[in-house]
Length: 481
Image 1 (cartoon, rainbow, N blue to C red):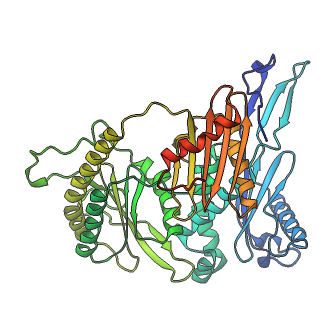
Image 2 (image 1 turned 30 degrees about the horizontal axis):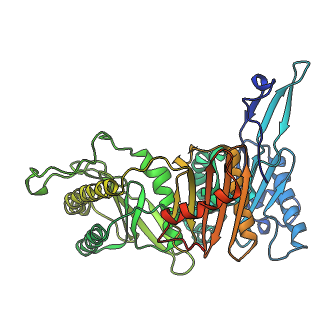
Image 3 (image 1 turned 30 degrees about the vertical axis):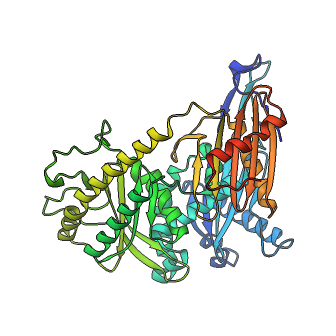
């Protein structure tokens, strides 16, 4: 499992070597029940990207996937194919609802070399893609569609195949442009939530703020509170919050990067008269509350689709680095008056609260002291509360995943994670990777920890010291032997 692949910058041919990352070749959704007879095959296809592909090729590709799924069913009826590996690409299959199949075809990474006679030679990197990562990306595609549209079945009930096709077209036409497959990694498997560390007093202030708001704005059904793109409080079910969190942090918030980035979080000065000033604004909803014709349209989201099937309006309101999401029943239509009232009640209080959190966070940071760069980086995930923490990722959005480690190391982390999935009991794996790196994976009590150590000439005994290092970082949350 150790990987020491030479990057593009080594060897005599380095100058002529070009690398191309994985790319989305096609993405389609079909239902075999919709075109059971010969000549009706086109009816099975509900969505196909890229759309300009010739009709017969679409039918052929869908037919091939159907055949693969049927063939693998004979070996394991309950678990049909999840992926198919070929030299040039990899296909991923997902059946999120009965008989509705989603397929994503990803081109393998390519290295283009110059041969001796100067002609380019293409080599497909067949082993580079991790099945689990891209299967998770495909499942996320469905979860994100469902968050904004409800289930496929719901569309069928509302308006048949025609309406379902319209919704799929409208959603995936835009969503697929945000899939940047070259920056997918272990975090896509976890789909976790980064929580903001808080002291008890500040947490109680936020709790009491939410209670007050839900009382004043009595049509609010659920609330979620975030600071600095990290979650502090949520009233939603875990799985719904997980996908809403992904939408907020990778799509909505980055579109509204604060204009006043400089000094925006300096605690509010005491001379502010009675806290009348506030920095609150709607991220979804009316842009200008003083405009009498301002539109009070909010995105709709669907939660608890397994049992109660709730349709809600999503109101996202932000002041400085604090954002609060209010979810109200979709049958209630918020008026401009309601939005103004929300702004006048929530704005000033949220501004003061954002300032309090910032002040408290800075105090805690000063008290813990800024330790020097540790000799290890880690990724931690807890399956019970979806808490995720990474010092490997400097920035993670759909378009860019800036990791501070070599891609080969990220692949090893993915491989260790796949090994963990195969066994139920606790486990530890240590890998010597490249010349100066060790990778340690530990699974214990539904928590997973991956540590990358950069120590020249370290031996196994020293690597075991990593447990002591972990104990200092995770003394409350990780049970070490």
